[in-house]
Amino acid sequence: MPSSFANPDALEAFALEKLVATRLPGLVLILIEGGEVVHRRGLGFADLVRRRPPGPDTLFGIGSITKVFTALAVIQLCEQGKLDLDDPVSAHLGSDLRARGEAIRIRHLLSHSSGIPALGFSESKMSRRWSMDGYPVSSTADMLTFLTGSDDWVQAAPGERWAYLNEGYVLLGAIIEAASGVDYRTYIRKALLEPLGMDHSHWERAAVEREADRATPYMLDRDNRLFVGSNLYSEIPAAGGLVCSPEDLAKLALMLLNGGRSATGEQIVKEASLQTMRRPVVTLDAEETDLFPATGGRSRELFGLGLYLQENFLGVDIVGHGGGVMGSTGYLAVVPERGLGVVLQTNGHGYPMHQLILAALAHGLGFDFEQLPFVRLDRLLDKLEGAYASFRNTIEAKVRRRGDNLELTIWMFNEDRSVWLTPEVIQEGRARFTTFSGGRRMPVEFVFSPRGIDLLHERYAFRKID
Figure 1 (cartoon, rainbow, N blue to C red):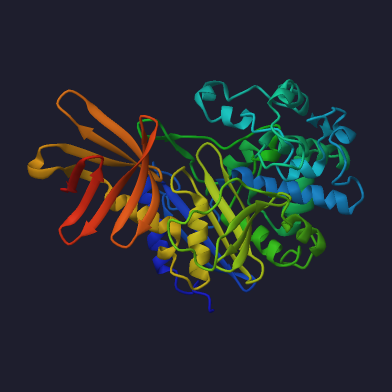
Figure 2: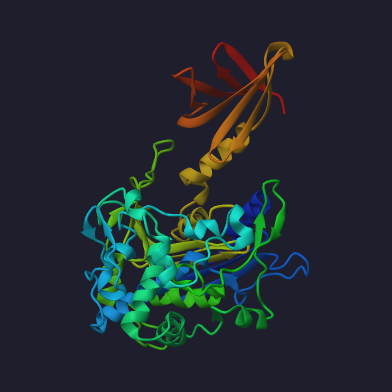
């Protein structure tokens, strides 16, 4: 099946639509095919005051995509014999980290399978604690102190269950320092950024602010108003502190597609090591539904060592990682068997970058991304949202979209009744949702006909009027 990356107009129009719908200020899209970048495009604004467009060399905070660099560094040190994936964390940090009585090992931190659930250290920096920049953790010792008492929160033995743990990658950064004998940022720069030719990648605020071509990160408040966020400048940057350009991230993507080699032929990691990183370790809890017919069978989401894995997406396997931090979101993904790659960076929080990545890869695989289940659901929910009324407008109702669910509100004389609707079955001519009321599970149906959209709930029938 030929690639469609040569004609990305429909994909760019879709991306622009999502920028507008979810208030994303700007986006940069880079498409890779056949071992090279074949398309670069910036949409929107890098900065809303100066109205500058973003481009492939614009600096963005990449958030948790930084974890790919941390994982690669650990793998390099394994190749050098300075550590082993089965080493317990205590062998390098001197702190006995356990879950259900078992030692947590380096491979458990890499695969987010330590047994410790997310403890909210990073999230505290992006919440109401913003005024104090989250928990005042500025060193590995502080992180180990923060983890004190977390054994009461353990949900599984190491290796049994996936739970994304930013704190674990902070510890991996400290392990890299202990094994290499140099500062984490120095190691990453010398061992990865410089060999890959990533010249527009920085950790330090001063270095970023010296660059004129940088995106201003934006966040949305509870009233859906944009305000300026921040890159994650930190003394413990291994979980999400890198700031770099989409063009630089494309060099990382090309290395993942090129057997671990840089554009100049330097072997960054062995191809066998990349295969180890891409080998599934744990399965994610999320799974596809049967709302729409699957194309080529169900896809599964898993995690390897520092990399998200999606098996059987339109018949191919995807490798990648996303990130989001205080005003920036992005995603990097590659399809090794087809030589395809996509890099996305935005300076805001809105439409899920993972979904936009899948739409881009579907486009590159020659598939109509409008037929992807999440796009079809998106279109359906938008179509159902609006005002409804019963016979002769005796009763008014409103359907509002709430993420991938709907909220139905019916106005009565002395009360408003609101219920949440979760999609269950989508068929030709009708869509069935489920709600819960009085301890009972109840259907809510939308019926499509030439006369419009009818909504059936309990004893009532409504028709869309806008």
